[in-house]
Image 1 (tube, rainbow, N blue to C red):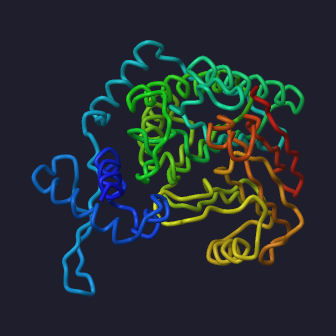
Image 2 (cartoon, rainbow, N blue to C red; image 1 turned 120 degrees about the horizontal axis):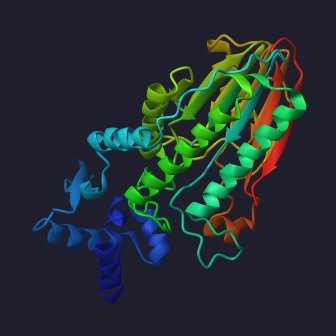
Length: 382
């Protein structure tokens, strides 16, 4: 009975445990499934008197005829950012600066610069981690400054660009209410939802304004992947806010927000398939670091059902590691690459303890509009 009381007390402190399977919990608590079922029954009987913090997830009948219920923790609406607040933030941001879009110079280099930004994890807490990775507002801004500096340096070398594609590959936010937006996965976070949102907005409005001021391309396209396991709908709210800002201040900037797990866009004879790597709902495991047969078959299906240019590049985030695979070919395309993009954030405390330190980086490539040539590089952010 002492063991059951221990489990009950833990479930009261962490209601999301009620969602987890008895087998997994029994292994974690080193007890029997029957102990877990009994503990859940006790907690549910008590919460039936006050369900203000729980909502019914599902109800089913067991083999012995007993009706069972599964609950999940209700989200606290007190931290939700409303549409009205978003519009107010945008109006205030425009009112403070009201930048005048510059007359863009005509660059005749016939190439595009793709900047791949992945896994910013704004709001993550890295204090007392195994390795040094301070990650507050000033540090995030410093890392975006390095991205801007590198864009300027590359432009001087190349002579400007026909287009700049900014690919934001998801997990811009670390989570919501101290969990991933999927729920049930507790995270150490240093910012409230509102603080994380305001930090994201300040950083990206600054980045957008500075990118336009660089005046190194004929056009700018933003590609936002709004389907990821940490950021999920919180990412979508942030990206839509940036879209509102750009539509108002820089109407010539093209903005794409992708709801699906896998998406693509084109530049000349190149197709870029982009994904976070793990979705916000269905996948138990994300795309791997090195392409395997299962992933190859998945991408072949996607490529066969969507018209692709001859040179196809698959680009993803999620794993906080950089890797490029050029050896495997997909479908009948002339060339194919499979690229993992490193994280702007770097290593969380969990990554530090399990895999070691990972260098915070941003990645880029320069592609020629009319042929297969691609130049790739990394922007080290620390």
